[in-house]
Length: 352
Image (cartoon, rainbow, N blue to C red; front, top):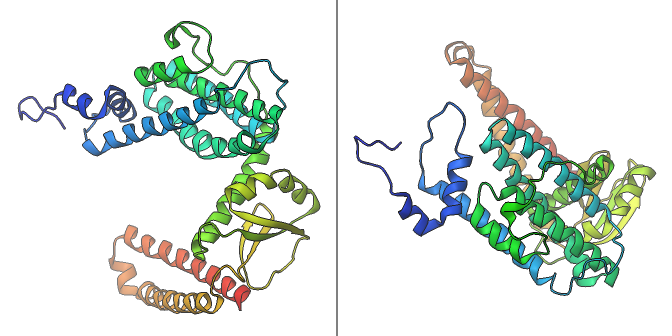
């Protein structure tokens, strides 16, 4: 906490020289909450700088792929991912406008950050690459159109908070008007509202995350494509089929086969997502004997830890004398460990 009497104030010009004015503004705004004093921490400036670098790199990627873009060249044919990102953009713009009306500057900026970093940069940009690099001219044009619109709107949403880099990048995108300062601020009016696309895309994103988690847990080498078996109802399988290209690209998946509910696949890792069992056969991907030995060792360790917790919680002296929050913490740990043990045993059964 800065204090004039303590003489520990920091010259903002020193911060701007090192991190940039936009990073400083971002840090001050996201650290702001009504009625509370803000404590300044140097490491928080890294968060602002990292976000601006992320947006700068995403913008450079977009600009590189917009060099041959000509508005009106084709009629855009929106894909599931296009409808999802445009619908989410409309929601975020409305939420940001509402937060600004309430002077909740920190909440407004955090909402834009979450959308821009995770949904736009980490998901949509990666999905758009499929059509930008491999699609037909019309598919590439549609991806370019949506990419430019979403990025331009994100920059307009960010502009009151980080005015310098947003103006610089906005000027290089297809736009109307002399300056981003003179554009109407996005408020969510108009635009595409497609809750069905958001729901279907949410399912595919959960599946990709679950496959990535399984690959990491089983230490499947990067670059090795894994076959998938998806066991679910016919209707759910049809929904997943619509996003097969996304799953293959984002989860390093090879062939994808479908089966009915209740199907079991031997020697495979398993994840469960919204009524679908996702099996990842491990033969040829990892050393199965080594993985079985590792899981057996982890099961033994977990069982020992659960015995220790059971003995501790079964001790009346501990339960009666320890603070209630300490006892609850141990009970919560026991519940987590039981869940972990069940998961490990299930994996071992599938592999063995």
